[in-house]
Length: 329
Ligand code: ACO
Image (tube, rainbow, N blue to C red; front, side, top):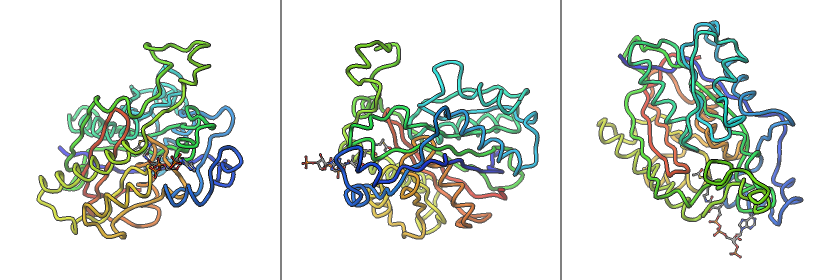
């Protein structure tokens, strides 16, 4: 049995934080941000809006598009590193908000690879034959863990959510193959040090600004290019596909220069690559499902096309997933 994607949707908060807004907050410029990252603006949640709220908007759209009731959902998986709270899970909060009374669910922590790891997990649940409708989402409220006094990180991130409905495939299309990796040796290059069991929240951790993301930008930059490009070329080789067979490559949107380098390494043409970082920035778990939803909205993929998703993020975590696109709303 194979798993396929039957519906896709995204949600971006209304509020927009532009590069010129950031110029007033830190020592930066629109020109620097745009030329070094490809980002012009990012969406930011409104007061009180959290990851589960964004996911609920995505889930509602997916149910409506597919014309099914929330009672038909079997499982809800959320790839996120910014859950509403440590417990209960964001999946449980969404399950309650949409009254998916027959679904169980869980959050999955793999940073920018969260959606890919969740997609793999959800697709194997469907392939087991036990579950027919699995809702997989990737979402992050990055503004909740960003230091808006640190110009090296605050310019990169935004908030957003996206998701897909997974069901058994009735033909040859669907999720064909995957290559996923973790290397905890990369842990120190990108992390949020406090708030967990190692450094529980205290006055000291707050004073030392340990509840924000810190990173070695250049190291992450190099590893992201290598990770996404190598995983993708290996996956294509394993499936005996040539680069020209790919209709659309949808990479994690961290930095346009990372995407351009991957494109060049793989020998893709610009028409084969989905880029929406300019108006979304890096929404961590959200980037790939948001880009996928926008690719469908703009008719960049059709039934039968080969689509490759690729991600790289904290952990390190990374990988690539190959899909033959099916009928999808
Ligand atoms: N505005 C103006 N100047 C800045 C800014 C800013 N916002 N940020 C850094 N600079 C300065 C630096 O201080 C440095 O100044 P110096 O030369 O006087 O020391 C100069 O710009 C160049 O800094 P670099 O670090 O070399 O700049 P680089 O071109 O590498 O870009 C960036 C930095 C954007 C962080 C890049 O390394 C990057 O995108 N790395 C990947 C990080 C990432 O994506 N993290 C997200 C999570 S992981 C993931 O999603 C894959």
